[in-house]
Length: 344
Ligand SMILES: Cc1ncc(COP(=O)(O)O)c(C=O)c1O
Image 1 (tube, rainbow, N blue to C red):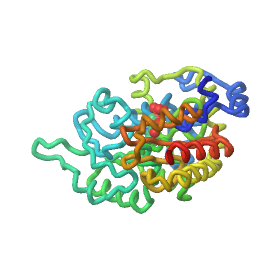
Image 2: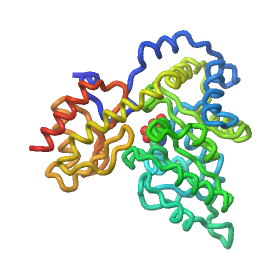
Image 3: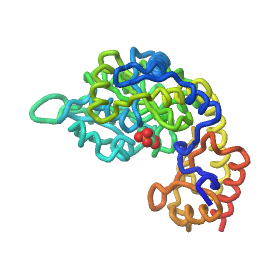
Image 4: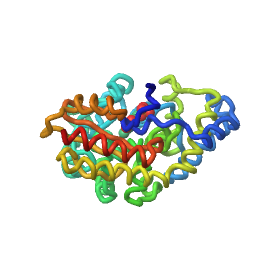
C-alpha cells in the first residue's frame, strides 16, 4: 500500500498537480530568475502584488522562507517580534527568526484567531532604557494550529491601528489567506491594505506543488530579493513552478468553498463524541481528545489501519485537513471510519 492508497487528511500540502496544472507547467516560458529574466515568475509576482493591492511581490520556494524574509524586512536583528504562541513562525520554522534574523520573539498566549488587540497593545515595549524595542506584530490568517480560524476584519483593523500608533509593522502569515477570503468574503486587496508585508502560499489549499510569495512595497521587495539570495532561495528556470502557481490562482481559489464544506461534514460526524476542539470555519478540523478514551496517537494508528491518515499535533490533539485531492466519497468514508473509531 502506498500513501496514494490512503485517504490523506494530514494536510492540504499533500495534493498532486492536476492535469491542467501539469500542462501549464510543461508549456511555461522560462528564463534565469536570479537575473530576473523568467517571464512566468515576473508575471506571477505582478499578479499576486495586484491581488493584494501592493506594489510588488517576490516568489520564494516555501512559506517558511517567505515568512522569514518578511520578518527580516520588518524587524532588525536584536529587536522584537510579537506573535501568537502557536504561530507557525515560532512553532514550525525551527528557530529561523532567531537563527537567520537575530530576531527576538515574544508571544501572547495561544488564542488562534481570537486575538484581543488590547492584549497585544499591552505587550509593546517602546524604545527606552535597555528594553528590547518591539518592531512588528505577526498574525496568521487562517490560523493553522488555531483550527483554521479566521481573524475577523474588525480585529485586523484594530491591530493596524495599534501598530500605527506605536510605529510598528504588521505582518501576515497568509499561507491560507485564500481560505479566509472565501470564508468571510473579505477581498484579498482589503487584507492587503492592512499589512506591511504578507507571505502567501500556493502549495497549501491552492494545490501547487511548490511556491510562496512575499508581498509588500517596491522598496521592501527589492530588499527581499537580496535576503532571499542570501538564504539560498535564488532559483533559476523556476517559471515551471510559477506556472503552477498562476494556474492555481486562476482555477483553485473559489473551489476552496468545497473544502470548507467537506470539513464541516467531518466536524458534524465527530462532534457527537465531544472531540471537536472549536468551530470549523475553513478546511481544518481540530480534534481535542482530552476527554476521550483514545489519545491522538491511538486514533491515528487505528485510522491508518483503516486507510485514513490524520495528523497528530500533541498527545491529545489531532487534526483533519480537507483539500482538493479528497473527493466527496472519500470524505464520507473518512466520516464513517472516524465515527466507528470514536464510538468504540
Ligand atoms: C500557517 C503556515 N505558515 C507557513 C507555513 C510554511 O509553509 P512551507 O511548508 O511551505 O514552509 C505553513 C505550512 O504548513 C503554514 O501552515
